[in-house]
Amino acid sequence: MILPLANILQPLIDVADSIIKFFHDDVGFSWGIAIIALTFTVRVAVLPLSLRGIRSMRRMQLVAPKIQALKEKYKDDPQRFQRETMELYKKEGVNPFSSCLPFILQIPFFIAIYQLLRGDTFQADVMASPPPGFLFVKSVIEAPQGAELIVLIVLFVTTTAASVLLTTATSPTASPAQRYLMLLFPLIIVPFIINAPAGLAVYWITTNLFSLGQQWIVNRVMPAPAPATPEEIKETKAPPPPPRKKKRKRR
Image 1 (cartoon, rainbow, N blue to C red):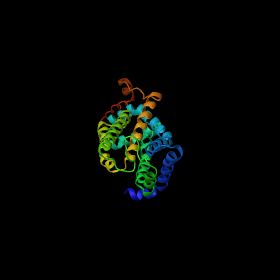
Image 2: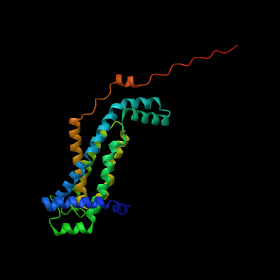
Image 3: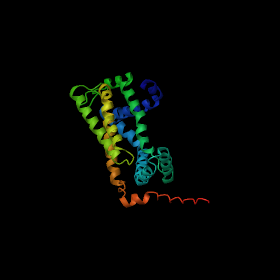
Image 4: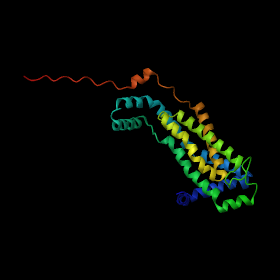
């Protein structure tokens, strides 16, 4: 499934190749640092969309009490609840899907970098200008082994879990079940990381660290709104309908 998609993403693969080689050949970075620089370049490119998603999430937190009130009001009518929720989103100018857009946009980059690291031409370029690794990573184009693999897995799982926890903690629509499922995500990806070039794990770990830093700054500059008080939640609840008047029986 990845191979046909890689053909569609060939322009993106070429862009990633040019950026990595620019940092390696022109700036003088090692291949590992060049991949990290590529990661920062990608994240900065999607930063406007990320900030837009964060603003949308903040607005979601403001309307969360109203959504909870609708959930209680239409708990026996899920379809009506969905309609009323969408109307509320429209009225408040909230797009519940905008917060997911930056993550969705990173998927094509992830696939493109995976294909680039496995490409014969790129691998030949890496081997022609050693060293192919950096720090504890022996080679960015080969699957990690031994202690190198263990360290990458630990860093991958911990940074991904921390990023997921920080993101879902500020999401008013994330249920505990969704948080648990998101925490299982890195464990599901581990077998893929084991067999992929080590450079892919470097890219993903760097992405997670960038996300953590970005979220920390956002929480300082754009703090989440204070949770609604019981009085505010009570005010958002729709008043009960007036009692129906009993019709008098005609004699």
